[in-house]
Image (cartoon, rainbow, N blue to C red; front, side, top):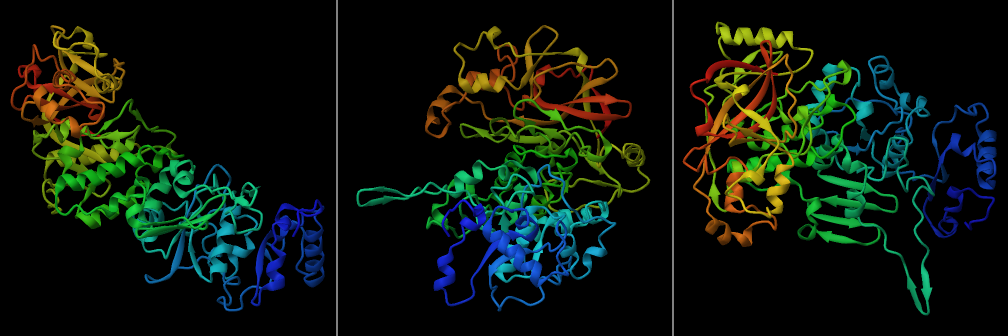
Length: 618
């Protein structure tokens, strides 16, 4: 229809030619009847209201009924009968064919399934009766799924009882199955919240593109925005929950403001004709879960770290969701690699996994208020806000020189609400539960119960430790080094931004703490260094660096900077197993919290003052 001023935006977008020329049934979604009722200045909307009020006078209640979407034309008669009348929550069998929705909840008040309405929502037509309470996006998706001829749809706000913790604990770890087994996942990539439209479902809901431009005999049509640019600039890509929803889905249908995109592991197709075979997909679309890594432990951990780094760049509304929004990925990794996790750390590589660090300035997620508090233990990265990583040059390799790790902890014991067990490292077996007669385990279990309100896990182990008071912790002072020459490399300078240096009693730099740029100790706490493990690496020389230039990033440290970042090599020179991997903890009573991880030179460890202690990290 033409864009005359007596028609609303939706009615202007109706293609009247389809109704005149098409042989089969034609239908255009016009919006919801209650919205149409408000368009008092639109001629076509007034005709729709008049026709319906005559046809269904007993059913018409302005502001309340009907709640359905209006279609201009006749729907396909081959669509499954009764799908509207059966609008309800449905408990399906394992092999049910369904679609899933991935979207941003946003700040809008959203209708949810609760204990109080769960039974009611399982009755035929229940969702129809509350459809005016459902957000715009959910209604649009329901209409789209019905138009596809599909019957079932997974929407987290409706399919999980939101105030039932037992139900959440049952379904949240199964997100890998829920999204992975869906026929496809509808991704509302352009929606900023649940009240946004699903563009294209209702006529006029898409962003109008620029009109074609005629230059002589040429007609120039503006290029629609591609999928990569759409996803990278979206709110959907910035949110924590949508990370696993996208990765775990085998097939995705992205709804942008201007077009729809199909994406799977084989190909990418867009409405405007842009097609990409699997081999040409851009790096943003690569899924770490689909890498072939075999049995190589380092390669497997690289997959895990890649997922953690991507996830921790995203935001969460509730600190309590930090583990839940990632647990579907952990389930997928567990199935693929045979891994078991303590909180979010893989147990068979636990000594290595404990050495995570914030990239710049780690901040502990809020532990209050109780309802939305983060309950992850401080020794797990899910308890912290910041980009999380494992320093590859200190823990993996630099210029081809591999790092070897040797643990200093005989046993780690994990304690939760279920009980206590050993963490079994280096293999995939689950180990045996510890005897109830162990005093250390009994004591740790009691402490975990006392601390139940603040954390879900406690980590108990016996280890060598030193009180921090024999050292000084302060900002880096590389200008005092007699080994380094300025200007420093960009890599070295940037690394120092998120560090504190450890100085011995003589003021010599003997160690480094990462992701911990400020130090303000409390007089009410005791601070200690825990010796977790030792690292060994063949000595890195400048000749090694020069030989590796074609495989190093543009910013890289010289051999001197590589060592001086950790300690003053004039006082603490390189030797075998000289790097101690330490944990700075704050002890309050019987419980301790992780503050930072770092490295200390072995010669700076004061063996005369060391003590063997049992720590309960929460």
